[in-house]
Figure 1 (tube, one colour):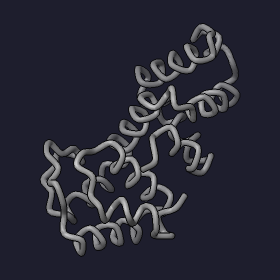
Figure 2 (spheres, helix red, strand yellow):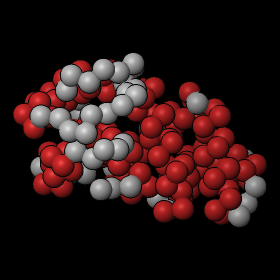
Figure 3 (cartoon, one colour):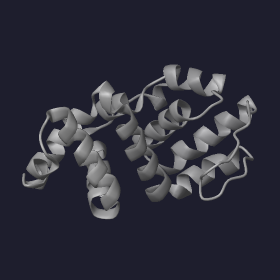
Figure 4 (cartoon, helix red, strand yellow):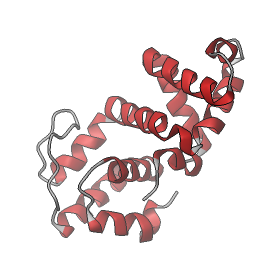
Length: 164
């Protein structure tokens, strides 16, 4: 299982920068919390980061976000980006599995799903969305939810289509 902070290290840098830029443009409270977490790790004040050119600031944020100490921050950032920007993909996955949801959010996940349904749901996502996006989503889904689905975990480890 890949942790959220590790996902930022494995995903394409363009995607990681897109996520941080999305937070900057669309989720100001989340972005400020991200800067505060990075500032705390770097032992500087957030205003120091805010005064840096945005590209340089985001590069530092990304480099720091790949540390285990920022797992919670990385998970919150990924979760918000997926839930708010990629709701149709989340909804398609859950609907393919026959799981009730509200805008990609599930109250109670089943302990297991049928293997064939899961394979078909993943194939459907890969047919419609970029491979890297699907891979990040499925890894985040697997790491952030209980229960763990054995086949999903196995596919994330062995299916070449789901490797970053």
